[in-house]
Image (tube, rainbow, N blue to C red; front, side):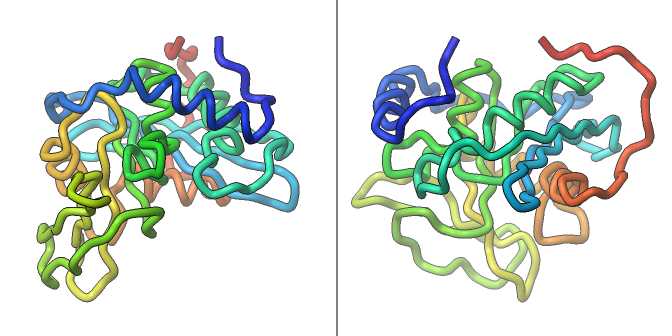
Length: 227
């Protein structure tokens, strides 16, 4: 089991080791699959994570779970997983549904070491995952046309590390990347399928609201199924 209480230098070494296990291909979720959105909010020195399960592709909300922990790792760009992943994992254990795919508010392989939080969680749990970030961490791109569904590649040198995806006309694009066990084309398709009337896809939009204290799904009253 991986340790999370490490130094920044140890964290970088863990990322380099896990990088060898990333799978950069896989299909979009099947009809009826459970997609879980993950996000974290902060209240002073306390991190509050939310996991929201929705059914794919109709986006019916099924369950939400939250967890809180004191922040134990400093804010260091590129090492977000060591600050946020432990509390996200705790929220996941409280869900009443087993996720088929994780959609994380954060980066996947669009990361200096190709190990953003979406990839880290995907590899750690061996689950398909997608990074869906609101801002760029690394790489260069040309702005996509102002049309929903338009996208341009996010590159580092000649390597494509993600997609700059327009989900709504007149709004800033999102930075979508492979997390684990999914292709970039499948990740783009999945994110667009999950978009309704907002810039963010429903799984991460609802997780963002829940992390801020909103009740977005009624209690299911079922025992937790995620292991």
